Image 1: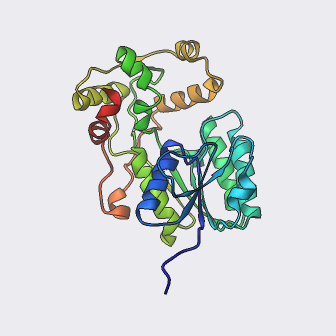
Image 2: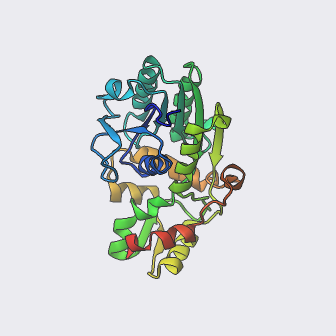
Length: 282
């Protein structure tokens, strides 16, 4: 019997943090996938790539042709709700049978802006006739090595309006592992998972842990919403500020996700992330 399987999985956001990790996970076990993004990912010359612009929907129809399973993730953008609903509609029309979506922690409560956006998409998927899996992670550890990196490298400081309330940071590698499993393992069908990281740390404590593990001084400075808005000037500030207010309310910490039960290993801690990514910081 042939071991060649039909290409059936489309990974959107294939150049993004989670999408690229999912692609590498699936490639490592010889799963045949299709990548969707605006530019071809540099990490693979062999996986099939289709141009897809999730903001406009351009390229979606072609990329979804023949696909049975979809990994759905989009970046923070002005019309994230409209973009994701458009993707869901196109997926249903294309005959996609299962959608794995990265959502947001606490989305089911719908008590903050980003959570309401993601819950609206979840409900559209639930009523679409497809099966689904929703992963609802809290703050990514990779935020330190991507979004906060310029400030860390230039002045050794992370400045955010997050106060001192602990956050259960999670490694995007753990999210990607669960995404890959949810795309392949039927036990995750029609299930949602809150994905809190293994330890609740304030941003000050996180900066101290990174400093100790990496060997460079990193400090955290708590600033006001007004200071953050003035310093960043980005168009989606209102959503980010609302998210950070949600952090300060204590909702970004919770019971650690039981990775041991699902994959036979523990979640990665911040010190593990720091050691593994040390060369990014120095």
